[in-house]
Image 1: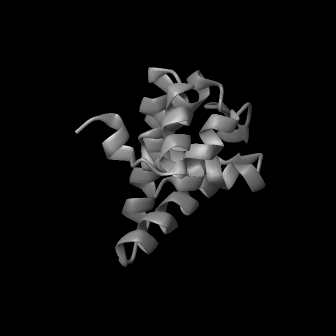
Image 2 (image 1 turned 135 degrees about the horizontal axis):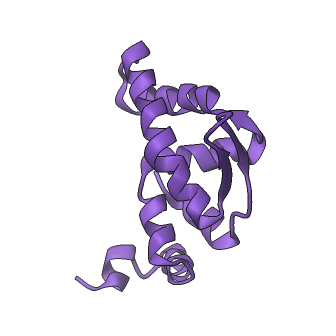
Length: 122
């Protein structure tokens, strides 16, 4: 199956492929992480925020998606993953500014191509 078939031949499929075409491999890898997508959507309306608050949002999003109840251990695991993986990757792409010392996060420069993908993802 080629990329066109995977994404569909619809107008939205073509837009999605066009958006992917404008992103680097690093950016695509970062956006493949569901936590990253949740974080960027949240930061669009809540920037700056704290790592802990972002952990709450990611944990709540996971619980809603799976129909489960998330406890403190899941929240802690998400905060650790955000701190060590997700936020540094988004920072390296220039999408967020993450201060790992004071644990604050703010939206930086999120390209239109990323917003186009986020509108269609998940």
